[in-house]
Amino acid sequence: EFYKPTSFPKWVMINITDLSENDCLAFYNEFEKIANQRGITCPQPSFYTQYWNSRERCSPDIGQIIVDLKKFVESNVDCKFFVFILMDNSGHQYGPLKSLFELEFGIVTQMLKRKTVIKGTKKNSNEWNYGTIKNLVLKMNPKLDGINSILKVDNIIANFFSAGHGIMYCGADLSHAAPGTDNRDSVVAVVASADDIPNRYFKELRVQHRPPQAKGESWEYIVDLKNIMYQLILQYYKCHKSPPKAIVFYRDGISESEFDSVFEKELNSIRTACVDLCEAYRPHITYIVVQKRHRIRFFPKENENVKAGTVIDSDDVTHPFKYDFFLNSHHGSLGTSRPTHYYVLYDDNRLTPDQVQMLTYALCHTYGRCTRSVAIPAPVKYADLLARRAAYYLETNEMSDTKSIASGSRLIPLGQDIEVHNTITSEPIRLSENLAPDSPFFL
Image 1 (cartoon, rainbow, N blue to C red):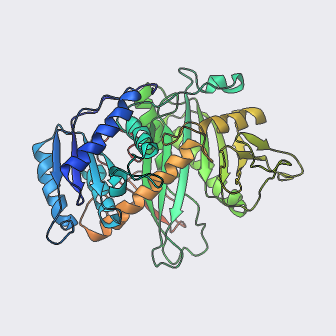
Image 2: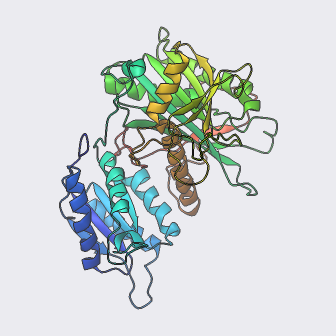
Image 3: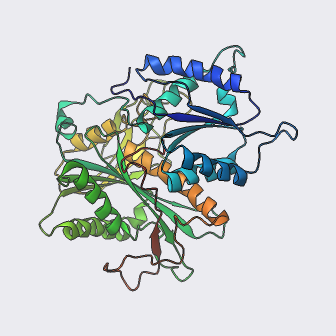
């Protein structure tokens, strides 16, 4: 059973496939059994609607579906959760629907593929895929304000997860468009823990525009990090009535060649954000770079994969001058496990190597989608998920007139300083105010 199982609010099932209502309700019955085992209260959907043209064997145009959904939401404001069943090749519907509900309505959704809803597995066509259903329960519980689990950690880091510890764990990701495309925009996603577990996260999204004249400037620098951290710390303050006394900042995607240029600017941005909140506010900061893309592998003498929790920080392997270590935090059932490379570039929390490594490993166990530890800390994983979601927002924005990303508006709010020579600009992606600030809707 979950640590804090949720209760479903009034919810709606939208079927955009050729499945019948009986097929969908049969899936619901199996889902309810698993949910009840976890302690979740899951009544039947209050409304069921299907969008499907039987004659042409296809769904209506997504634009028409969106028009109908807007009318439905306006007349049923008490419906707080929508479950969509989509065809397996439904990429053209996923993005617009997520954008509509998260940017405009502020309602949490769950998308299901058609193959997930029908009975049958690879081994037996008459059995339900309970593994997939259990994973759905894992995702839906935190989306609806539940808590899947809490950590029991080693005494070395027990104070990091005790009540009132006052530490904010941040994950930052900067993702770029695919190579070879004309798009020069990048998506910035930064999340910050809102509770002690941590289970819920505040979040900030930005779009960075890189003009052609910015040829010599770093691709990886988050130009608006000062305002991002200001907003995240402010949200933490409003929630806890006090700002965090320490910040552990995990930064994804910086190569070693850019450590000096990017790290110094971003650390200064974090410091400046704290001073802008209050001149006397000086939280302790730990800045850690997370590298996943490298070619280093480790092989035990036994013919098996490296076990989860293995740390390699030998001087024979690590950097001769920088403070770094390798951590294989996940179980590798297939192939060769790839450890994650961590660089501790700044630490005025004065953590010992054991504390940094144990803390990082503990955060790898807090990922809401999985019951095991994952390859990178949950804040970094969530920032990556959020950046991918923002890519759908941008794609939808190009095809519609949504105002969530206000092109042509002032990119930097009045009253903030900006370096004159910095030609890379940044503007916010505004989520709906109806979404809870700490909602992990992106799971």
